[in-house]
Image 1 (cartoon, rainbow, N blue to C red):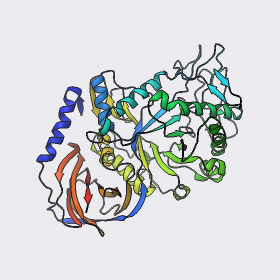
Image 2 (cartoon, rainbow, N blue to C red):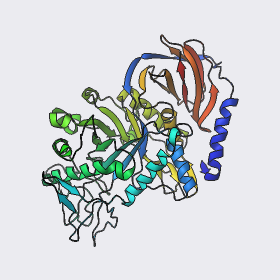
Image 3 (cartoon, rainbow, N blue to C red):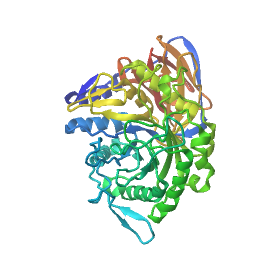
Image 4 (cartoon, rainbow, N blue to C red):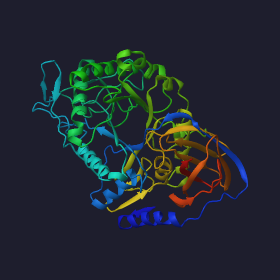
Length: 517
C-alpha cells in the first residue's frame, strides 16, 4: 500500500476518528477455545522493539522524513518503536581499491596510518570524523525521533555495532584466517580490506581504545546517549560486504581487554555504564559452549557483559510453526538481557511479498521469541530502505522521495510494540489454545495496563474466551491487522468480570489493550 505524504496525516486522522465511532465488540459467536491468563505469574521484562538504519538515510523530502519517523517511533500515531540499532562506520578505501566506499570516520594521516594521540597511561585517543555520512544520517534520525516529544519513546535506546574493525593495506589491523575450517579460512584481498579476516591480537588494545573513543563522544556528537555497544555484528558470517571473524575465545579475550581499557578512558562498562552486547551470531543455531560460554565462564569478561544477542536468519527455512525460535536455557541462566537483534529475508517457509501471509509469519516469530525463547527485545533488520521495489524483504518500509510504502509485517510488529512498552512483563498465558492460533499476554505492574496479542492463522473467524485468573477486567480496546487492516482501532471489547468473549477475524493479528481493576 502506498502512502503519499500529502495523504499520510489524513489517513492517520481518519483512523483515530474511527475509534470513537466503533461499536462494542460483543464476542457473540460460539466459544471455540479458552485463553487462560495469570497476570501475577511474571516472566521476562520487555525492553522494546525496533530495527536498524545501517547504510540508509532519511528521505530528502522533509515531510516524508517526518512522516517516516512518526510511523516508526510515535507511540500514539505509529508503531511505538523504542530501539535504534546503528552501524559504526569503519569501512575504508585507498586509491586502487575495488571498494570505492570510504566512510571516512577514522581519520588517516598522509601515509594512510591512523591519526591518534598517545596518552600518558599508554592508551590512544583516535581522531574521528563525526561528520561521516553514515553517522550524519544517524544523527538526523535521532533528532527527528526526539522531535516527537511526548509522542516518541519514553526512553530511546541506541545500540551501536561494528561490521568490521578498521583495516587497510597500510595499517593491516586484520590478518588472514587459517586453521579453522574450509568455509572460514580466508586470505584478505587488500583491494577489499573490509571483507572477513580477524583482528590481530596485537591491535586488541588499539581497537578497544578506538571503541572507547566512539562511546565516550557519542552523546556530545550525536545528541543522545549510547546505551549499548555490540562487540561485532555476525562474527560467524563471511559476507561480500564488511565483516570480520571472531571465535568464542576471541570474543572473550577482547571483552576482557574492554574491561581493562574502557575504565582507563573514563568509561564504566557493564550494568552501571555502557552496556556490552555479544555475540550477535547470524542465527539461532548457535553452539552456546563454543561462542558464548567462554565469555560467561571468565569473570573479567562476564562482569561487563549486559546483553546476549542473536540474529534469526534460520527462521525462513524452519518447517515448524516456531519460525526459528527455540529454547535457550543456558542463555537464560546467565541472567543477561537476551535480544533478537536482526531478521529479514526469504526462504522456503517464509511467504513472499508484503501482505498478510508474510506478516503472520513475523507475528508468529515474535510470539515464539517471547514465549519460548524468552527474549527481552525484537528487532527487524532495516527499518526502511531507500530503494523502491515490489517486495523489499530486508525492510519494513520503502521511503521514496515523497511517499512511504509499508509492508504488513510492519503492522504485525506494531501489534506488539505499540502497546507492550519497555518495563512491561510477559505473564502466563495459553500459548497455542487452538490449531493455528497463538496468544501471549503482558502487563505493566505499575499501572495495571495489560495487552493480549492473538494471532489467528486460520481462514475461519473464531471466537475464544479470555479468562483472567484472580483479576477482573476494567476495560479493553481492540486493534487489528488483517488483509485489509493495518493496526486499525475497532473500538471497545465487551467484558464481564474476569472474562471477555472475543471475535478473531481470519488471517489476523489482534491486540486487546486495556486495564484491570
